[in-house]
Amino acid sequence: MHRQTTAVVAMDGPAGAGKSTVARRVAQAFGFTLLDTGALYRTVALAALRAAVDWADVAAMSRFAEALVARRGVEIEPSEASGMRVRLDGEDVGEAIRTPEISMGASQVSAIPGVRAALLDLQRDFVRLGRARGVVCEGRDIGTVVFPEADLKVFLTASVDARADRRHRELAGKGSDVTFESTRAEVAQRDAQDEGRSIAPLRRAADAALVDSTGLDLDAVVAAIVELVRARLPAAAEGAR
Image (cartoon, rainbow, N blue to C red):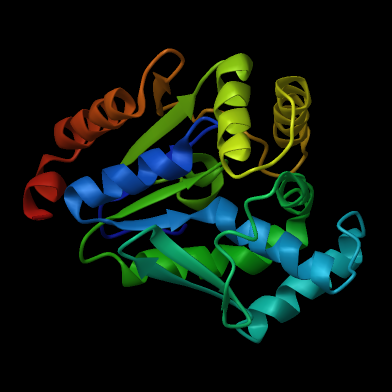
């Protein structure tokens, strides 16, 4: 069984719960490395879209993802500004992968075993490289599949309405002409896809601490998880700075 020799914080939760922002802030608080696994699936979805590979074609997507990783078409690296930078054939696609279309595509391709297998070693290798400072990993199956022996597991969630409201404000701030109703429908559909897939469905690990961010601001959520890290991983937290 795969084992870790360093402090690994696994953060899972549904779409729109704020995992990316919270994970980045927690990583910054301790000088840990950030691994945003959702960005990897989004990048594969974007690459497939550009290459005209059907997200629903399981065999084609499996071959495509395996070839993409084998030729190092997807690369991830630490970033001071965003915590983690992802590149597709050398292009920084940090903004391009954050559209509603790519979000749904990521949910679709992440349900394909071949795609998940292609990205698994990439994720684990990245964590091994970051072990000197510890790693905060965020996604939807980190604590259950990718790093089941993580030192601390957190399940970050919020109500559907709260998550849809955050997502709607984020998209509106970028100039997107979307309604709250359509955004809520998208969030609910994403939940159904992530929770209903047969491979690594979204669920809370039995030993994961539950953090419900409904009604809380960003600082309060970050503070709660920072305290969990300090309480559960005192040595790593103390030695990070």
